[in-house]
Amino acid sequence: MIYLDTHVVAWLYSGLTDKLNDVAKTLINNNEVYISAIVRLELQYLYEIKRITDEPNVIIADLSNHIDLKVCNKNFNDIISVALTITWTRDPFDRIITANALLDKNILLSKDQNILNNYSYAQW
Image (tube, rainbow, N blue to C red; front, side, top):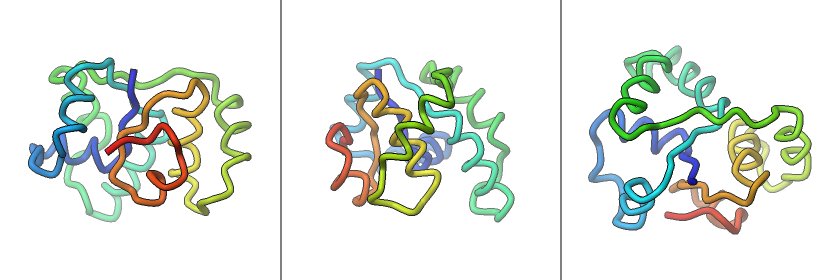
């Protein structure tokens, strides 16, 4: 089981697989692929500021069909409890996305250097 950071979801949906390295492609192809529910909200934010052109539910439905992407249903209060311990970022999306993966020590696939530097299960 792996989790995808928001930018990875956006790239996959847009067909920008050339932005993924071999490690990322292998992890996506060889694992169950999940996102934190907060990724939906971040995608909505990106849609509202016109950084992406489709709404989150369209993106997630498409990726669910193509790569069997699933939205995690871990207890949100448990995720927030873990997020409270993450002090290396002020970005609430990154805190919750990382906490979601950290709850069960899952891999988080991200190119974000801050996440890679601070979350020991992050991969790129």
